[in-house]
Image (tube, rainbow, N blue to C red):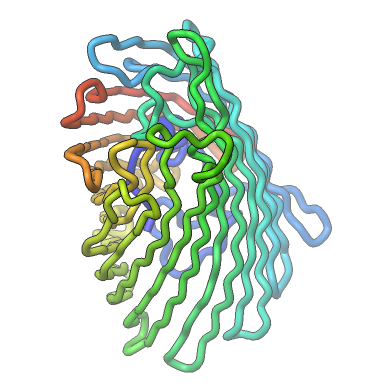
Amino acid sequence: MKTIGVKAVLGAALLAFGAFKANAEEEQGDTGVLDRSRPEYDALGVPAGGFTLFPSLSVAIGSDDNLFATEGFEVSDTFGSLHPEMILQSNWSRHQLVFDAYARSTYYDENPDEDQVEWGAGLKGRIDASRSSILSADGRFDNLAEARGSIDAVGLAAEPVLYDMATGSLSFSQRLNRFSFSLGGRLTTFDYDDLASLGGGMIDQDFRDRSVAVTIATAKYEFSAGSNVVLQAEINSRDYDLEPGDAGFVPGLNFDRDSTGYNVKGGLEFGVTNLVNGKIMIGYLEQDYDDVAFTAVEGASFSAELKWSISGLTDLRFEGGRSAEDTTSALAGGRLATAYGAAIDHEFRRNVIATVEASHTNYDFEGSSRDDDIARAGAGVRYLVNRRMSLGLGYEYSDRSSNVVGVDHARHVVQLNYRVQL
């Protein structure tokens, strides 16, 4: 399940109505209104030996009525962004190798300190050892800016928090008649930059640097065509760089944020012809922190994904889930995040696609009375001019409410996007 929560405004807008890579990803079955192939509008790419290169460039302009995500001191501004991207994909009959790279520059008219340049690159591969045995691996590096409306955003920062995220994963899957299983591991590291404070001086962010190791085992049994019983077990270890005994560790000011946890779920993966398909799983999760000052995060867990193809032109999507997240708070080591979302995708014409979506996320800080709610709603339409050009227009609304003073805010963002691709 994709986590529903606070994301970078531009990232969410581009996801809703920007980049369209139907040719760059493998299709499996009925992919729905948003992702289905449109041969007369899909990019052809540039042949490069046994590979095909898919370059693109998105240019956007927009308006944000609450740039700093505050209440009572709203600052509005207009912005422009450039988003070049390239995908290099193999054309082999077996196995697969895909390289991607992007950059995203955002510039504000009246608040240049908010200007951002994000970039990243990744490589993923798949070895088809046989028709039923697959080995997959991927790795990527991203240099990112934390959104001002993020649940962990620093309120007194003079500029957005910048951080590096590096991820590597390896997995193996095997099918034996009606049974299938997979085993995989993922390691992600986070490295945050210190930043300037509005009151002068620097705000230390080294205490957020960490590595997160996750191992996931999944077993499935296909009891009918397209329907499976699924069992999944996930264990994780979160290791922070700043620990007791380090020179920079100050007792009472810093905490041992290391933790270990698990999430065990079971459920159904189903498909009713091509009209309804999805996955529903329920289970239990727990995250235990090394510091005795922090309360463990535990409780029922679930994940759900459902797509109903109301007609060949309209899809209705639902998703939800619950997870244990780390915090930057001195009062709580973790929080229980519970998210729900729904969206409608409609194809007015073959080259005119619209999406309306809404979501709600509750953050319950364990061991603390703090409780936050974030509601989001948005709409976007994409017009595919031809296989090389497209236009997008989108709107996003977000509202955050909390029992902690000073973090409530509402925000409206409008963006117009132009994309060219080969």
